[in-house]
Length: 363
Image (cartoon, rainbow, N blue to C red; front, side, top):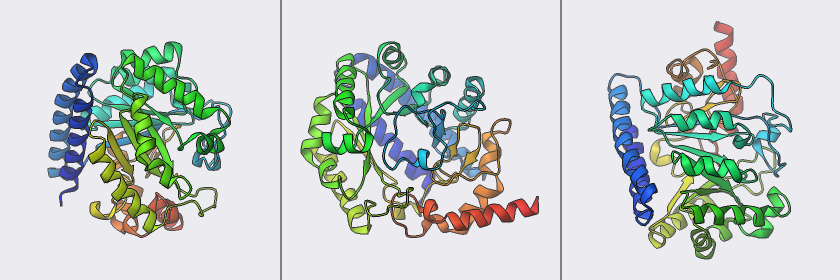
């Protein structure tokens, strides 16, 4: 299996489903038709780069903000102290993010996922993303700031796709995100649906909410609110509590039930992360399929493996992909190891730390 072609086929399927779901929405369909052309150009760039021995991942994850206005249970960013109540003074500037977005586009990156903290706390960075035509920016938000001018920003710039966090039904969402959050995001979703904005939701899947979020009733209600994209993200036990994390049995249930829901809800995009890692030869972090840029410019294997030997405050994405840390992780095979929860590298943190220490001793 050629991983570059496999991921490219998956992206093509995303665009086909998005086009199907937007057949009654003229503005959205025109945007997606243009974006599909841009995606084909990006795919050709990635194939060419691979043939030249410099593969380019189709995805990036960019944590553009350190501030968040919520304190969600089990939040990896809070536990790792990369997310706080106040914005850090030395976050990357919007101008620098704009340069990185432009470089990623030129290399053939198709999607840049914007996270935080709460990414809507950085409207200046969102504006830079909006200028980067040809790249889709899913914006992972808690939804509390999606109103007024912010909502108009997403309506006007269709390459910005809001992805709201929801954890299942009212009790499950409020238990994780705070009382009243389910009703708040439900109102926001209905407003976006009425505006014709293409949006999605992100669900952190645990043993506790697995049956709820994989149920037809839950998905049908999201569709009724105008949602067209559902991302099932496996819980990573960053707070040390592994009890809610999916085991192999639950992970297989997620994969099988998600496929069934895809046949039932043909006008929605349903995806699971990390998904079937074994088919792809293991975790896609460290540049195999994506990597993470933190709010200060550090190039990291993934958000759950916050180690870096390359700064993008001044360096280039190409340099990050060829960094000693990324290369040695890809060569080590630890990405393919069995693990609990949704991140192979999180459980392999001792091995990653050893790799980084060995690199630092050689410098």
